[in-house]
Image 1 (cartoon, rainbow, N blue to C red):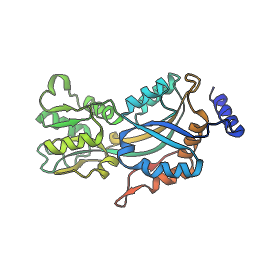
Image 2 (cartoon, rainbow, N blue to C red):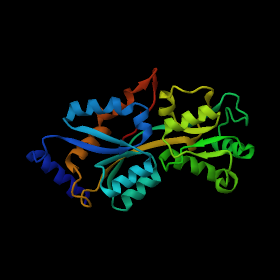
Image 3 (cartoon, helix red, strand yellow):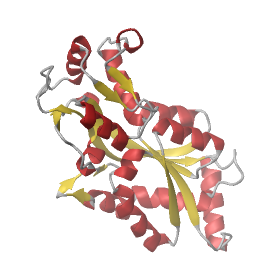
Image 4 (tube, rainbow, N blue to C red):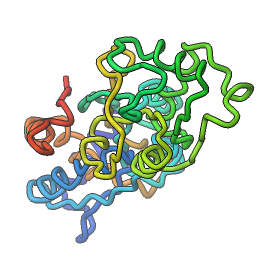
Length: 268
């Protein structure tokens, strides 16, 4: 099926059977948006291709659902288990590695539960739960939220039974969650990209980083046009190839904030 879709896309490109106003919709995460990455990538892509990209920045779970409904042409998300399920269900095609960074645990510089410098994020979460220290969670089914819940599970924490009063599910994006954490002096899990661009840190600092459980890969997926007639398969394919090709990978590597590289190209 994939070969047939790619041939169709190539045919559309070669015959010029594309609308005069060329744009695609990419469902992606708040981390790629709020970090400023898209601000660097999209102008470069449009210069190279003539195609504009309209980003719908939501949690990964919602981005996958947009793809299932055909409300996006391509996805750039970060939950490998969810991505694989999306493709296995026939909703997506040709999932490719794009880049990676990592998650970090932030919290007040006073660090009341003593997790600073721990190399084991599961142990850090165990201490937070044992102390019932304030924790701000996105609670929005994003890739970050899904990763956070996996860590709580590995820590043996029963949030429904024991999280009352200290575990705050906010249902908000990463920036808003960090604002809440800063205001209440709470711990939180965040992607490094959003953290680097976040200005309202107040007393928040990075306390835990470097554990392999905090690895954060991103994947690009084409939405299956066989299921939805409105998918712009040809132009989505151009984006998919550019993002995972030399120019897109160089643009990702070149995106920095205050000299710090936030995403590391990983296309195979």
